[in-house]
Image 1: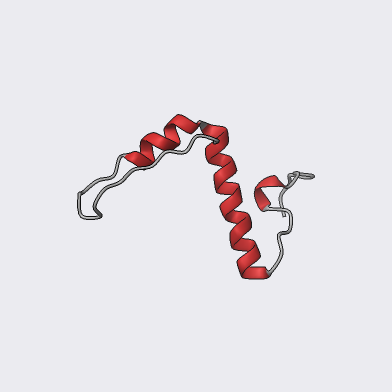
Image 2 (image 1 turned 135 degrees about the vertical axis):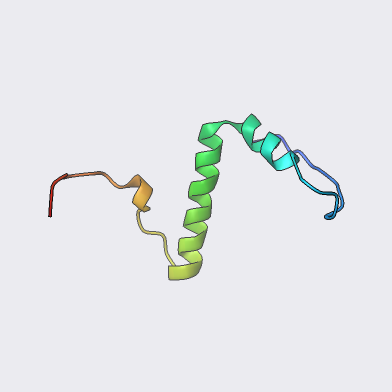
Length: 65
């Protein structure tokens, strides 16, 4: 995501398609990386540290409890 794109518009201009077009152009990996970064930011603000996110954990066992 090294390209900088800007969109100038009034807030009352209705639907904003810039965000949708921007993220679709970035691809799935960039979207996932941005979402993971937001989760980490939340954990830092909420708990003061970032443990291993639940989405990155390794599954060790499946079974009924």
